[in-house]
Length: 306
Image (cartoon, rainbow, N blue to C red):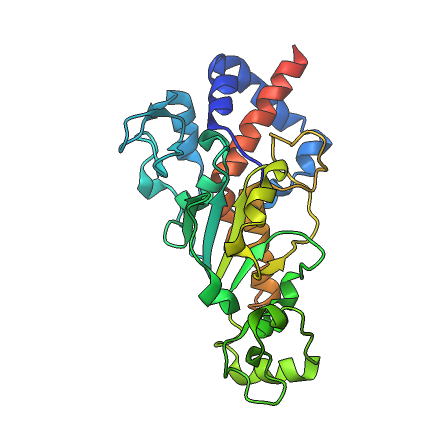
């Protein structure tokens, strides 16, 4: 829910490329513990040579709107002319993702665009208040947001049973026979829900779409209280430390950027719900993020050595 800035990368790393190059070499030879402990170093990423070349050539035009951008256009959701689309990895996701972006957030600082660039067939970005109606699909949609009623990723199937359409569970404890508002308060017996899960498997309990809110934490209230999002199953992610360079002042380092939240959710979903070993299938979602993280860290390193 934090943001990123290609402009910052351009300004901090293009003014004195020779000096930064020398610093980069020094960092590689004397990697401090903060770099050694960086989880991004373990990612299985596609070659970032195309981004290295684009960095050296500087800003380029967006092929659609002709605006001057670095790496990609954050309004058209396409790479710039110096970054051929064929050289950008494409990630196939196991479900659809809707990203609801706060209207006051600066487009150029949002990491949400990374998801759209790298998984274009599975990601849709909406600018609030122009968002879809989710009421008819509540039984197959969840919202990533922490709170007292949030559940863990591993419990998604269990809790989605409360939202299954009428007739999905053919037993006396069928929760869908109650009005929806009352359903949310029901706590069916676990054995009944497990029976439904085993009976309906890929139908009533299958998560098909996940929603993320792209904004600072101080701005989320307006979106999360929108009536169109009420009643959706809320999911809270495991605690992880952010690598984002625009850390929100006064907030803990466990507040993730939007692209980090998407990535970590998918890793957990792959392991907890799909029950498959994770082998880097979604690592390329951090293709731009990891590159920019390294650029900014190196630029700050150089500034600190002067």
